[in-house]
Image (cartoon, rainbow, N blue to C red):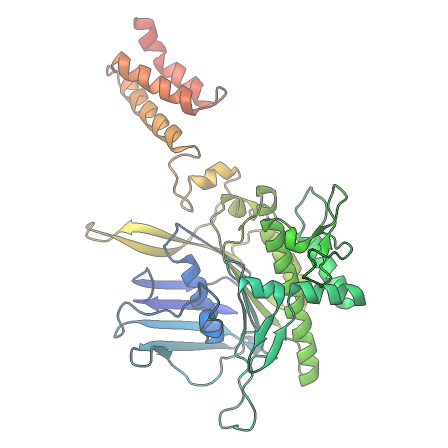
Length: 438
């Protein structure tokens, strides 16, 4: 488990300190303030490798550099076996272009999964990715982590030195389905749990061929309209969820196999980093995806494993959807925001833990500290409402408002608000004295 992360002169924030909750951690903030960057740092802290260092096909996951090499530092603590906390502090060496610190392999934080926003995926498995002991020159080091570009999730991950590392979704799914063994049953169960509520479940269908040049058996999904759709032709949202389902099953199956070969216990901890969890998903799916992934990960890891999710999101539905299960002792909400510095002369990025309050209506989340909108409407409606409230305030104080100004505001309201919007009652009431005076 990742318990604490402290950054100094690294990334958009001058200083950042996060104390993560043991189960669910939600991260919000505007574009460019560092949500994805923070997940990259979390992955590095747990595995000691930047994603792109292990796979040059990625267009994200680059190694971080401090804004000041002398002052920059990354400090973090992880909880490993027997609830033992281990703390590290790393500084940056410009000559080596690398973060220095305690040498050797990372302390075992359990299974670490990272779903990137572009469809890439990374996995660190304590049974397969521990480095070989220092000084053992006869045995090749194990691969530091499995890092997939978006296409490699589907077509397989190959390493020139080590050979085929993963067959990919298409081939593995087809093989599992033909065997109809535990892996396929697990995949079916995960797909069912991740299916959007109120719609048909994601179910594997018969194999298909999609090209004369592609002789693979392509898995399909059964559709409500009775026509199986090859997974390669599925919608972006379905492909995102199907890829997550496959990678979760593949990661857990391979971890169990490796643990058995090593004659060691299965990991008691799983950390799952997810960037833009709502990517490509319909609002119906956004309402269920967090609870579904918590359910799936816990089901895979079974009752003896602790599961920690660290999730970045732009979706107010995601925050509203977790209200029934949010527990302040187990969960946390963090927000990145632009604020004025102490002198008020410039803006700076601030990372802080917010007090999670159940707001109910999604529109209230839009105007909350998570998203900072002035109104849960179009920009035009927000401006019209602002002008209307300003005019209403003047009228309420007995101040005159020019008739042409009121007419322009009314025209803007008609152009941007629904006829049944409750604001109309307030507006009519405020204008009543002026109309009577005429």
